[in-house]
Length: 461
Image (tube, rainbow, N blue to C red; front, side, top):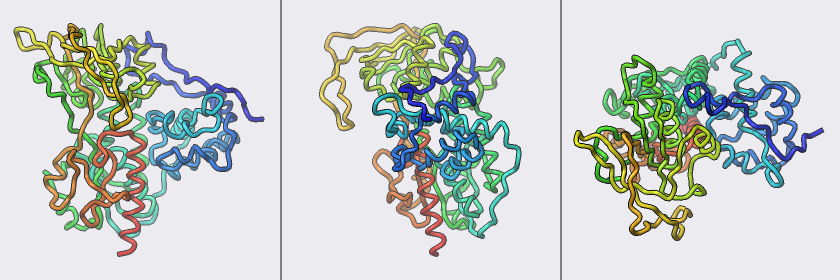
């Protein structure tokens, strides 16, 4: 019998008082008993509306039915048909605005916990499955992938399954892109990312690190060396700033730098070769998932006061509801309808505070969100010793500047035809390098689309 409970099972997690001082994963995952009961909430709809909300097209009711049958490897196989990173997606995808938003159970209650079930299946596979992946037979064609983030890894994985000889070129010393430098350990353990990448390597994907394409070697030189197509998945790693006075002071970080030092370089550990200042009071400017990650990391570094400074109201916060809830539980203070106008300096050139104005919401802007308007005469100061700017990122201009004939938008995003093809024959792109900063699963969807287009291009040559 279906489980007709109107509420999905809560995710077991560390208590806020404990987790705010460690980097262990906050969410602990479903037990088998909970997963089986949650899976029974799925109505196994024939038209599968949830699938239309999944950017990579996982057949969700089919994998959930496998859980009900206790065929967990079968469930993993269903997910893996569409996704190269199941354990990652089960943790960081915004399911509430994608697959779960289409779930029929959500009409009169809460949707099925699709993401939590995906994580359960992936974790169980990783814990119990010991067989090595058998690489498919090579088809004699070579493809280069630039960037080992979600779009690049997905493109590489899909092409490797079809027998392509794929080489991934990564600029940093560790593969994974934003999965390793951007998302904190307490949300996405790096061992999970490493395991997913190892699976791709077992399929025959080669990964070369410390390869800055555009500096070490150009895309044209890659093509001349025998690669028949190139996929650009370099992400959006160029931080944006507000352009207000004081942004060059000691104690002001971009969220990219702050999170990279912590996540990739382990700056939170005593004796780290990449130390980071331990601040007492921190303001994070922005309202997205990156802002929540930065604020929660600052709290774990020992800051007594951590503020999210955001110019709209809570209804407009772009961060996942779960991340906002976790931040509040950990003591992060939300200064909403607040906009910085100046970062204040002490006599030594260090941050001593931030000057702000109160805002109120006016008419909707082009994105549909109500535009914030300054309340006259509402200036005030917050005493601080650190400010982290988390207001977005843009694609790095290196690829554009070193690749002749590559068309880009005014914001630096690479122009594609919708299937990943750029203005250059045999050169494809996807993910944040095209769209600007977006979600992991959207980047994966773009990598999947491009892999299909690359295969069709090469097979028709």
